[in-house]
Image (cartoon, rainbow, N blue to C red; front, side):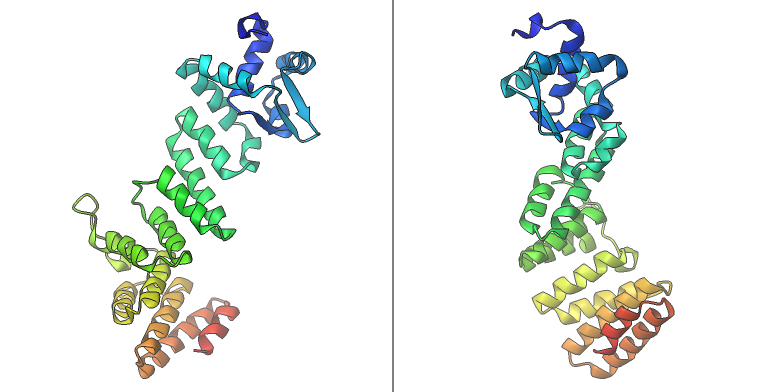
Length: 272
């Protein structure tokens, strides 16, 4: 059937469906439909425009119809429908990359950025560093905030691309051609400093890593994070054969972990 031959009520439901893509989870569909739209949704299934694929998935029977409906809508209408989808609580249970596309299409840039970051972290947890780096390159190519750069370093280290990881470290510490100010090591988050330390370790730049961590520890408040940095510093001191310094730093890290109740971390340090 031609789109303009579909009655107004069902056509509106089809337009909502078109912003979801060719297929989507049934639970999301049930959560999105308003009471007055349910009969129209059922009529679309009966007419063969939509179909249930098992009990978990709903989709267009013909993907061309979905594409045509989406292309027919004006940008403000698309944005409103994407915003309706993005605001539904059921979206939180879907993959972060799917969430990000809905947020982007609705104009919610900050929410989209957060969802893309969650997608990158999920890829790294699953051991898919290449996919994580691809997401960073495509979706967050110009982001220079510490959390994004930390993820880029992690992905590059997982892929064994040490020199590129060190280039990112330089962007953080030295700034980026005047567009991004340099950042003292003591102001960087512990998780990022740990990654930077390991990048220096893998590159054999142990003295540089030791200097960075010494600077980062200066004036830093005591706590589990400080203990973690001292553990990294002790390791680099051992690599440099500075055994007395390594022992002294490791003992302080050990005390910090024990005071924080982090026994597993304490055991690791005790073995240095």
